[in-house]
Length: 553
Image 1 (spheres, rainbow, N blue to C red):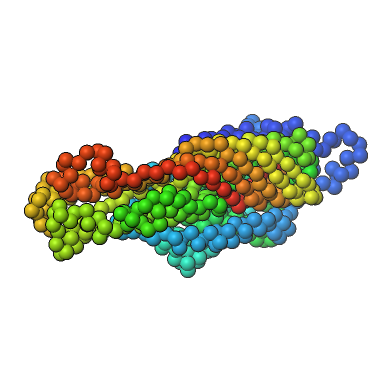
Image 2: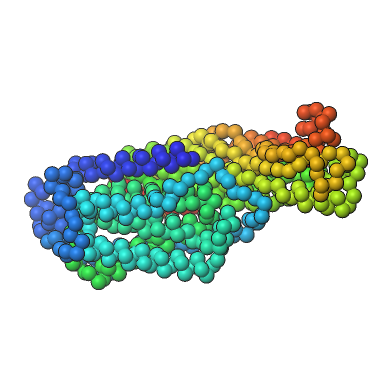
């Protein structure tokens, strides 16, 4: 997962670095056509031509005039809420809908969430947007606003975000997945990241190159995903945080557009308006929530282990993030592909770890001849076990290729669809058990063990799946609101048939506690009495509902 996120960030960074050269050859207005002269005379960007979209290093001068206000000629004043898309509202609402996943989680005092995926990168990537804007501006790469207007817009955006997020956090008091604090919803890291992404989008994506917007929103999306994989947030927290971040950024700029009017503007937006009829080709980054098949019934008789439903595992809603693109030969048909990571967490670990002591103690009757009092003491001792959750998700990495379709509805709206075939690669969920104590020799009292010390750790519970082919389709609604920019709302459907394998090793407890009683047990006998393993084949149906930010070219 780390390599995947690193690769995505590198691709986005390289694309952003080389972003503007492609705009030199774009042919939207030809000054040599006589009838176009009148239109150029009434345009709002007389000082703006395609050649200016490329960064010319010799002309760039360091800009440290933080308090000096200036306005370039022929720049158009923005109207109040001129660029508001309100795309943050459905994202925030999606987070509210997804909040039900928390109700299925029961934090245990003896569980340690020590996942294989652990990174602190998200503590830094949340500031990518403002860092990029400040760095570009200090380097003399002129954006939308001068320093006073930029600082005011950024301050207003972050101020609104902080107000929204902290008010909701202290009102909702939602517990984090790792049980650390009751301030989970919404995600502050994600909201901060998407405010910064909107800042970069406004200053350089709209005025210089859309690839700056892709870089900003791509890193912001990666930040949200890392918050989920680090077990610091639920998917509902991330969706609502992203929505609040975008909404705060757009509102912050709208308010400052009202206050500053035409003052402090250095560049206009890239000329023209996105037209999904003529230019449906796109590259997008997306985030969504997955539904569909959410149980695995292994059909094992596990009453001996404290289970009553044949080991039927339940899963919560999935977190899905991806990158997608397609090239269209005409306004209707194209080819493309999608790279997606979908993480599906299990519904709490208490059912797996809270084994039935009475059933387990029955195994020792006639071996240790435990009294009721001794059995109670021993139960308390065994309950000191620590379960190490290394991965509480079934994670799917999927690569798909296929045909894409576009049905224009207007110059701003279009319906889309696709038919895909690809490869699904799975990563297991894993629960280890860790037990420290002393061996119980025959004749010892449970409260007074005299045997040797032991420190035991083993694979207690794992679920894995094979890699397989998958098929998918989907429908989307595209809204193109600026030149080369659009938001998509989509519903994707995927189907794959996999072999799922469960391994359950309960025997570490008695084996460590009563070595003398089990010293003559063979490996085959141990597996028969204390382990369970089962593989099943199941066709999994998955629906992903989400939104994506796209550039059209």
